[in-house]
Every structure is written in structure tokens, then in C-alpha cells.
Image 1 (cartoon, protein in one colour):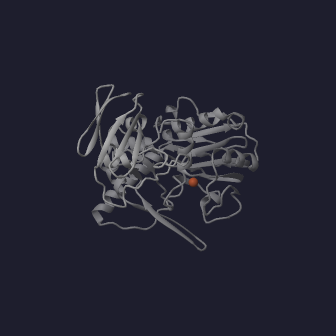
Image 2 (cartoon, protein in one colour):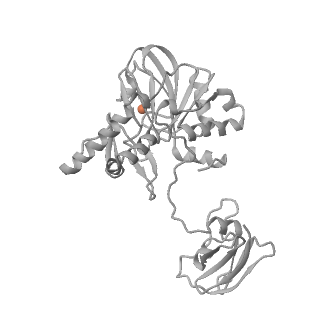
Image 3 (cartoon, protein in one colour):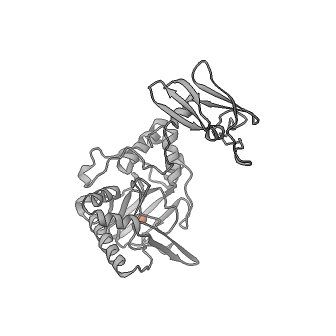
Length: 372
Ligand SMILES: [Fe+2]
């Protein structure tokens, strides 16, 4: 879109666009967003301009549009010059409130049979080709998980794969870890053979892990298959069919906790964390790790009703994508979207894996020019 013409008012600059629309920018905003090298550091893109140390006055001397129609220059009466590109002005043509956006596009699956194409690729296609990262990310954005086949069944190869995506997140469980069901490294059922009900990880930390990667390195066991459930599909269904229960799960802060030796982690989050447009950004649910809390009786009853609806939906068999982790396939899933669970097992199973932060996943999506 080209700038056709500009007009000034006492408070603002009016820009007439080539599509016939008009945008109105405050003088203070224009000075604050100047892109000239003195105002915006050319390498770091960090703001250098000062518009705050004294009250701003709208004292404009001259405004001009260059011949290309792509740059606006503003001369201030006593405070130097600003310049702004039409690209920046166009991107800010309409005022919008900054808020977290859910990653789009997504394919919500209410039952495992809704997954049209299994999100899978080979280890080599991710590791040897830069376009592989984009494919890998697209699978997670679309379905919430990705399977990486023909992977060497070693911790080293799994760690290398995770580090290709981003640095591995540290946590009380370490960074990259290898564990089994026979060695109790931590106070957590992940290190046992017990059944683990559908849940998301990290309901007891302020910033729950964004992605979780799992690779079963050895398996001499019966049972222990995993279930994955699309939490966004549950949110969607509850919003449609049980709007009051949905609202309750958007509003009640549910505390989660992890208690171990010299560790007591605790925080709280609603099951459905939403942005100001009511779009679900994050699903948090771990009934095992829920800390004691007591609301007034009527609110507590409402909570139990809504939480129970969520629980029963998450346990519906047809909703669960069942997958048996085996050596040679690395599974990564979106921990802000999918719930995961595990059946009990007998025998021995050794796994390795770790977490990535949500912001690093989003960063990789941006630098790969995937829509956010
Ligand atoms: Fe888990």
C-alpha cells in the first residue's frame, strides 16, 4: 500500500493510503517510533529516542513525504528530526491492543481419527536440511505433535536433535535427561511404572514448558503406551456445549505444586488461559499435582462440576491418540496444547528427553516465517 498524501492536525498526522483508507497517528507516537539511526539502533533495533524525560509538546516545524512515497520525515521545532517508513506505518495502520496470539493455523482434533495426516518425518530430514525445521514446526503447529522416525536410539542423537531446535530448558529435572522406571531420581510418577492420567507438565511453574521431547531408548516392557489428547479441542467443545463450565475453567486459578527434597514449587493458573479476546492460549491440567485449595462452597461446587467435565472428556478413549514410544522414534509435543498420559507397565523402559521454552518455539516459527 502506498501513501497518497499526508495532512497535519494539532495532535496528529493523517495519512491517506492508496486503497482510500486513512490512518491517524499522534505526534508523540510518531516521534517515539522514529526509525532514523539516532532514534532506533540500526543493529539491535532497540529504542534510543527519548520522548519521556520531559512532557511532550506537539511542536512540529515541517512534515514531508519523500518522492518514493515510502518515507515520512518530520522536523520538530526544537527536538531534531524523525523519519518513519510507510511499511511501519502500514503495519500500525489500525490501533490494536498488544496481546498474546494463539499459534495459527491449527487443526483441532476431537478424536484421534480426525488427524488426517500423521505428523511424521525422518530424523535425517530434520537434521540435514534447513527446510526440515520448517516442516517439523508446521507439524507441531497443525496437530500439536510430531514423530521423528529412523532416529538413532541414543541420548546423543536425541540431544543433538533438541539442540537443533533451540537450547534445552533447565528445570528441577535437569536439562537433557535420561531416566527409567526403575531408578527414582525425583519425586515424580514419571520415574515409576504407575499409570499417569492425562495432564500437562509444569502446572507448578509460572512458565510451563512449551515443548516436551521424549525418546524411548530401551523397551523390554508390556504396557506403558502413551495417550495424547488435544486440549484445545476440549476447550472448543466445552465453549460450545458447556459455556458456564468453560467460563469457570477460564476464571478459577487452580494451584499446582511439586514437593521434593528441599523443593517446594507452587503457582496457579486457570485450566484455560485466554487472551482479552477470549481465545485460549494455554491449557493447564494436572489433577495429580493439584495443590489443596478451598473456594466458597458454591464456587467450589461449580469448579468441581467444570473440572470433572474436563476430566471425563480427557479420558474419552476415542479422543486419545494412543502411541507406543519405541526406540528410533522421537516424539515432540506442544505442552501448552496437548495433554499426555501413560498406561502402567511391567518390565523396563528407558527414556530420554527434555523441554523447550514456548518463546523459543515461537521465535523459530517467526524466523522461519510461519504465521503466528
Ligand atoms: Fe508429564
